[in-house]
Figure 1 (tube, rainbow, N blue to C red):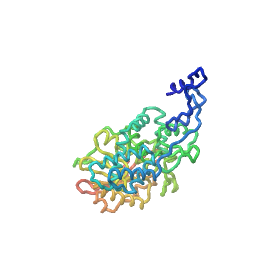
Figure 2: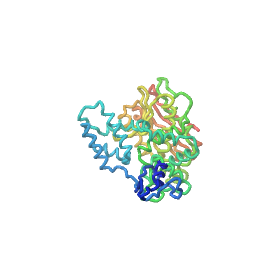
Figure 3: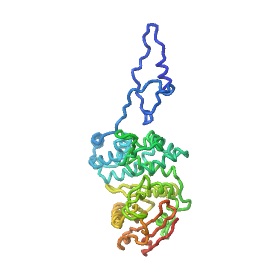
Figure 4: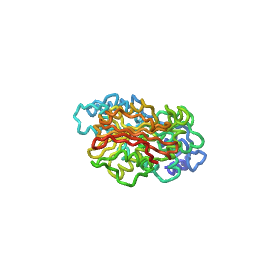
Length: 421
């Protein structure tokens, strides 16, 4: 393309002095990197860049209009809440809005005329989006680039995990140390520069964040146990043993560094005070999802889905195989009341999923927590919900757990203050 433009530019005039060609303007389409062209180097850019027009994403009204036209064409009704959710998940990115539409269209192939797409229908479609995204060349390229074994790729993903992962609303202002990594991720479309703030970036969309978390990170960090998944006497997965084995392979650097960038303030005493920074839930969720996908899904054919949507609800991790369906609900350093709240959520997820088993997994940094852990009432265990508390030090070099669960033959089982690492 550049050679064609140079030829046009350097074409001699006719004898009459008339120009053979006249170039009034050139429109170039590209990623964030196109705004960083060095105009001082004529080998790179033979013309000056006069203006840049950054194409805005679709607005909420435009998404509604697009899907209403789609619904009218298909003879269906799409409730407003679904269209709002599509806009929220994609932030109006035209390509992702299209992926959502294609997935929805496929789900309607066997539906009668006049069908209604509500949040329950959309939730089941939403669970297929990451697989569909992976079929597009754009996202295949993103996987290939971010899973290369190189220092820059590893640094960029570590930086993304610390500052952006699971954090769709916050803006991150760059410092000199991370400028290059931020611009590298922005070039790839993973994060966006904030036009209202200097050197500030935010994740491109919650859907892109899910793709990074559930597709790219497991590819880039593929370590997992090299043993068959542990099973109980009735051949179902031994979830507590899976948790134990996964903890050993948690990325210690990631967990340790999270207290400076990917943290929340603890509502309980950690160290000498409350309100000390501790890893937030997305840190543990990312690691559990990564290891379970690499171990159970990639190597042994289980279905592992993070952020599993069930209508208006979503469960942190769902593991499915044959007749077994397990719901995992994670939480990070919480109070007793927060533990009870997560147990109630797990109960709702189990009912909606018709799950055979549920686990609440509480990662905590609270002082001496395992000696005074909060447990669900005994009737809860009879409903198939089990509980494990995991205490760890900042560097994740000392990890201990206590657990209560019902065995396959109905016996109440306990583990107290067991050292895992």
